[in-house]
Image (tube, rainbow, N blue to C red; front, top):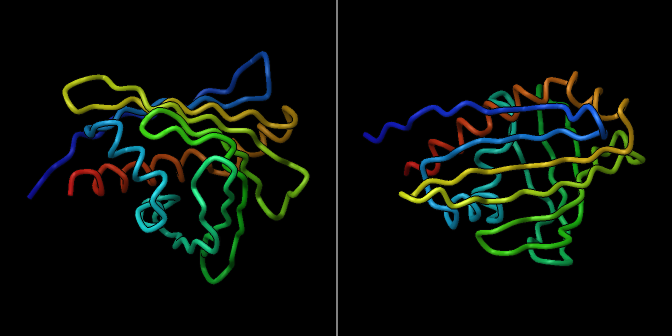
Length: 160
């Protein structure tokens, strides 16, 4: 049985711009962490909180591609969609993110996969929102639970 080290996730709200920064380390090389973010079947397995199941309806993870997925919680579906603006293998992803219930609230996200050596990766995510209100609403939504529980599932997936 493989055990994984539990890493802390740092989630901070930028005081200067309506942005959220997330930093998390993983005990896996950048190529493996990147693949878990870009492979549809892998992504479905770990994204979101524990009580949610995810179904991907569209997934074209390449520069210029797009995605749509649905999270189901207690029979209620929540849709999310966006475009992949830049996908550089094992380096970074730049994408938009939109919650379908708030279609005017497009978020621009950048995920950077930093090689720490010794088969470890630091993932640095920056998400810029349309307004401070939109950012604060996302933070108040329980986003931290989804991020932390999702990353715990990702740790387990990476250990297999």
